[in-house]
Length: 143
Image (cartoon, rainbow, N blue to C red; front, top):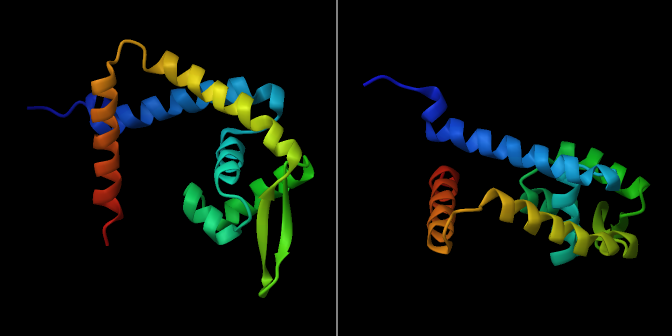
C-alpha cells in the first residue's frame, strides 16, 4: 500500500482549514480585520476583561503574536487594555462598544461560510466530525 499525501487526514484538515481561512479573509476585507482578529473579538464578546495570558490560552495564539494583534485592534478602537488592579504588570483586555457592534455581522458571516462549507453534510455527520476533531485535540494535548 502506498502513501498518498493528498488523501492523508493531516493534508485534508490543512486543506480545509486553508480554504476556510481564505474565505473568511475575503469576507473580512471590508472590516479591515483578519481572521485572527475575528477570533479575538468573538472570544472577548463571550468572556470580557481577561488578561492577555488568559486570552492567549483561550484563542490558542502565542502571547507574543497576540500582542501585535491586540495593538492593531486597539488602534482601531475595537479593544482596550486596562491595568489590572492587583498586578501592575498585567492588563485586562476588553472589547469596546465599537467592537461589540461588529459581533453580530461577524457571527452571521461565520454561519454563512460554514453553511456553504458544510452543504450536503447531515446533522449527524457534523456531530460525528466535531467529536473526531475534539478527540484529536484531546489526544494531542495530553502530556
